[in-house]
Amino acid sequence: MTTGDKIKKAILYILLILLAAACLFPFLLMMVNATRSGVEITHSFTLIPSSHLTENWKIVFSYFNLFKGMLNSLIVSVPATLLTAYFSAMTAYGLAMYKFKGSKVIFTAILIFMMIPGQLSLIGFYNLCTKLHLVNSYIPLIIPAVAAPGTVFFLRQYILSALPPSLIEAARIDGAKEVYSFHRIVLPIMMPGIATMSIMAFIGNWNNYLLPMIILNKNEKFTLPVMMATLRASTDIQSNQGAIYLAVAISVIPILIVFCFCSKYIISSISAGSVKE
Amino acid sequence: MRASVTGRPAGGLIEGTDMAKNVVKQKKSNLTRYNRAGYFFVAPFVVVFLIFSVYPVLRTLYLSFTNAKVTTLNLQMVGFANYLRVLKDKYFWISLWNTVKIWGVNIVLQLGLAFLLTIVFSDLKYKIKGLGVFRALYYLPNLIAATSIAFLFKTLLDWRYGTVNQILNSVYVALGVSKAPVDWMGSPSTAGVVISLIQTWMWFGNSFIMLMAGVQGINKDYYEAASIDGAGRWTLFGKITLPLLKPILLYVAITSLIGGLQMFDLPYLMAEKTAASYNSVQTVVMYLYKFGFETGTTQVGYASAIAYVLFAIILAVSIAQIKMVNKED
Image (tube, rainbow over all chains, first blue to last red; front, side):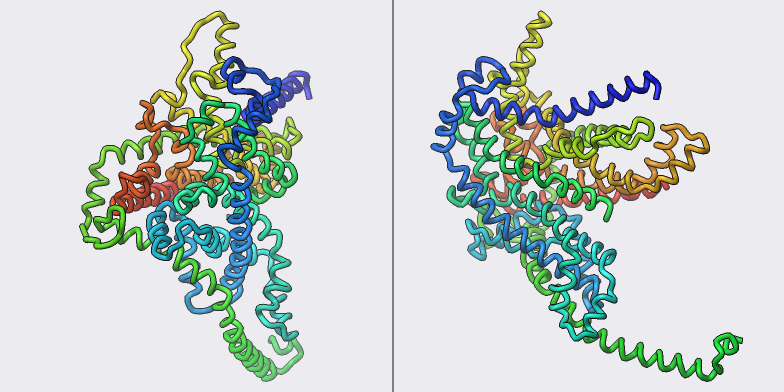
């Protein structure tokens, strides 16, 4: 490599690092400003943390309990993710391994509903929930996770490429029941694919805003994003920017921590999603 | 001839196939028995799918032909009246144009940036290291809830006290010029662009990961063969990388479009209803939300029609995109 090439390479690295910094900088500002008072923030800009963290903390938590929001988000996201994982695997296996009347119809419906935007059914969905008296309940946020067309589609492809049918036939000869084979043979083999889709499902559920906002209207039921959105209406907290930064920081930090440990899995799950299509 | 090869009389062979046929038949009847288990495996999905996915879609379709306001009691059918109203509604078209504009600026920047990064990281000459770390950092903003992102940037971009204007101001002071602070979210000329840029910031890492996965899936032999034939870096990119990436590119573009036309969280939380910019950042789903759920303006029938017109548009554009890419082949 010539000297010119080395310089070019160095410039490329600098640009890449600057871009990475641009991704992190807003979060850095957020953390610094979370420790500064409203007055300090309105006066000047700095990257040196100040000493008003506890003061801001008190303002935030006198307005709302973000930890309650996180707990509510967990109560919704964890079961929804588990349901998506288990039932999508089950459906995908049913569609990939068995030939029965109607399986083509179901698969076509899955393909169609992957293209249909969620907002299309928003009004009908809410209408259904009022009829079933499910407004303000977590059921409409959890149970529909059983039917996740995109996940079923992905896992069906996964089974077709990773699960040899002879394996199931061998189990049949040994007298294994179909359900037993599914739990003991199929699920373990599918685990990498299921984990991939579960990560995406969990993030989607955790960050979901529009649907919980429509379904939930009692403060104590609010999930984290819905709770965060109430900042919009509050004038007390709006007047203190330090408190807003702290609220945002508290809502973001759990995801940042998860990301530090799982970024590898998260990234590979996105790559998998694109290549397997 | 065959018999002599296998060393068996021809008759035996026929007998053998008959036996094989019987085995197949038996196996088939066994299979149908097993296949019945398929119903059991798909049953929970089908039940929940019918109730929570299919029914709402059809129910919305039905409501779009009614005069439903707040409640859905005593409905009257009004035919295509709601649809005609959507087509004539100036604010619907403004909101559609806003959505397309915000999405369009974002997708060009997002794919452009993702492409540049893909070229840099797949370059055989420079062999840039650290893909894992860079990829993770570029993807990070995508992981954060849009609600949190919205308040973070809303506060950073506040025109009086926001950090962005403070930084700009210190730059101005250093340069010795004086400029009035920009009201980023308040002025119609900047609000849409700001949202586009935040979207780009949130999504370019995602596109980059997908494109990069596609490049890594391309057989290295192609490049080697072409290099031996004297193809330069840009020829390699134009003749090998780009054509082979097309399916992934199409996938990224279509999913981005379907998501982009449904844009809601960011503009809804960042825009001020009273600001001059509101009409330049109101998206279709914000408009739908206004009629579907906001107290005082609820007209469920009309909102349902808006949803279906949006769906028709998404469908038409998706099909057009697929056709366009297939035509080029």
